[in-house]
Image (cartoon, rainbow, N blue to C red; front, side):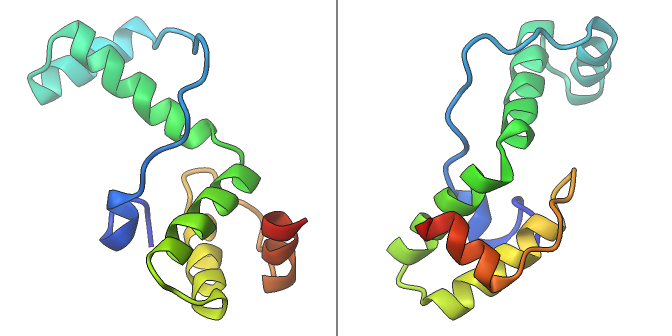
Amino acid sequence: MTRSTNAAATLPGPPASAGPPSPDGDLVAQVAASAGLSPGEAARVIADVLAWYREPVEAYVRRRHAWLRAQGKKNPEIFGLIGAEVAGRLVAAPDLTERQLRRIVYG
C-alpha cells in the first residue's frame, strides 16, 4: 500500500520543516509544463512531495499508528498495515517486525 491509496490518502502529512532547499529549476520547469502549473505552483508541489518523503520512518510510524488508532483499528491490524506501507515507501525502510514497530510507538 502506498500513501496515495485507501485510508492513507486522508492521512495528514508530516509537519513542514523549516526552510527546505529550493527544488531544482529543471525539475520545476518539467513539472510545471507537464501538469499545467505555474513555476511557483510546481515548486510548492515539489517541496510538499520532498517534505513528505523526508519524514523519518520512526515519525511516520508514530503518526500513522496514532491516526489508525483514532480510526478504531486494533494493534495487530495496524502493525500489519504499517509494516506493508513502510516497505513500499519511495526509499523503503528496512523490514520492521511487529516488535520493532511497537518499540517505535511505545518506546
